Each structure stands twice: as C-alpha cells, then as structure tokens.
Image 1 (cartoon, rainbow, N blue to C red):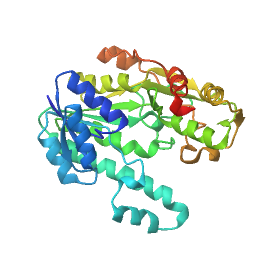
Image 2: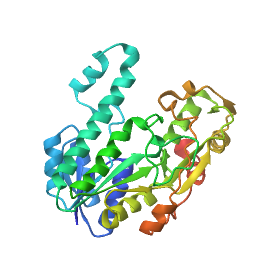
Image 3: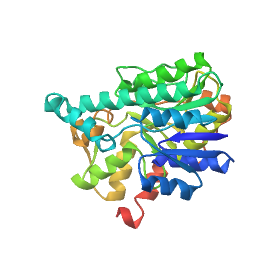
Length: 318
C-alpha cells in the first residue's frame, strides 16, 4: 500500500513511517524542509514537500496514495508562515495571543483533514487521524465509545475528530487514533518532558495539589503499530485508543523526576509549568480494552516510569 503520512519527520510520525516500511508499505512523507526530505529518504521513504496550510499539496499527496495517516499538528508558532504569525501577534490584545494561536492551529488542522478526506472520497481508502485523549471528559476512565468534551483542556481539537468520522459517510474508511499526553521512549516522554525541563530550571520537581490525577501513556513504538493496524484493518467511523497504561499518577511522575534529578518534590501552582499549565492537574485516565479486542493490538514496550528512569540515567540528562 502506498501511504501518505503527515508529520512524517516528527517523534510519532517517524516511528509510524518505520513501522509501515517494516511491514512492506511504500511511504510518502510530508515535509516542510530539505532536511526533513533527507531524513525521510534515509529512512526508506519518499518526500512530498508542503505543510498543513498548503491544501493543494495535501490534496495531491493524498490523491496519489492508497491511504493516509495524519499525525501532524501545529504545536508551535514557528511552524506557521510569517503572515500567520503576524496575525496571531497583532490580531488583538497581547493577552489573547495564546487563544488566537490555538484557533489558528485547530482551524488549520480541520481544513487539512477536510482536504485529505476529499482526496480519498469514494474509494474506501483509509484515513487515520491522530487525536488527543486530553480532549476527553476529565475524572473518568475514557473509552473508545466516548465522544470528546469541547470543554476539556484539549477539547478545542474536537472538530478534527468530528470531521474525520463524518468522512465515513462519504466512502472514506476514516478512523481516529487517540493518543495520551505522554507518548514516550527513553529520549522523549511527551508532556512529561516539559515537567523534567521545568524541574531542571527551577531545581524542584513540581506537582499540583496531591498529584493523584492520572495521565495515560504509551510507548511510541506501540503507538506506531496501532496506526499501522488502524490503516490496514480499521473500520470506518471507529475510534481507537493508543493506551499502554491507563493512568500514571502525576505524583509518581514528579517523585521519579525528583529522585533522578536529586531535587525536592514541591507543590506548585499550575502556572509554574508554563504552557502545559492547563493539563498538569487534569485527571485523564483512558482504556484501550476495546481497541485491543477489535484490532488485536497489544502494547509490549516499557512503561512511562521505566522510560523516565532510563532517560534520566544517561549522561546527557545529568
């Protein structure tokens, strides 16, 4: 199968590319840069130049494929054009910059999904879209059958899932893979990585309140396998959960960071954590029981705490 992958040079996307190639698929990866193109070629994939705002390029890439995996999202203003940055910065009061950026990122993602889907209409070709579990209702175990909560900390991204699943009625085998806030290996641990960097800078490992709120987690290689299975066997309109661990308490995460960095664990206000402040006190447990039953997926790689321990044991992290 010829597969078009967005976000193909990112942390998750590059693991997806490797999993697809290992399974015998031909991969074409979207990239914004010459360096990205070189890394794709080195991995055994082909490069397709463009970005999420370049809808013509997205349509061409999807139309020439047998299926699409969409892992890209604008996480930083540096990933946007100069005109888009100016619109965010100068489009209103300084206090509204973050909200304007989030709107831009969400709108760009929605248009990208619509464009990718339109290129696949009518052929029962698969489109697999990445979506955050942080868009689910807080405080209860989220399952694949639950709809996003627009009021959740990650709920602004709800249109991405809604648009994806609506494509099922147009002859696209569209599905969603929901990802936890910590997709990890020994080098990177999702939002936890920012907790580590904050602990280094402040010389304390912070947590909000009692730290008993939980974050689900999955190893990046397990997540990559699930994307492949959803592409190959996924059902139109389905939601799948890339969850290796249903909920790791933030207290356990903070204590592991504190022990490895030899800094005290201290209660801090959410603002201490910078851009991840909206998420650090969220209770976001999630299950993958239905996904494992429906696709035969089984997470087998190390858990989050083991990867934090291993990562903070390297010389580069001391």
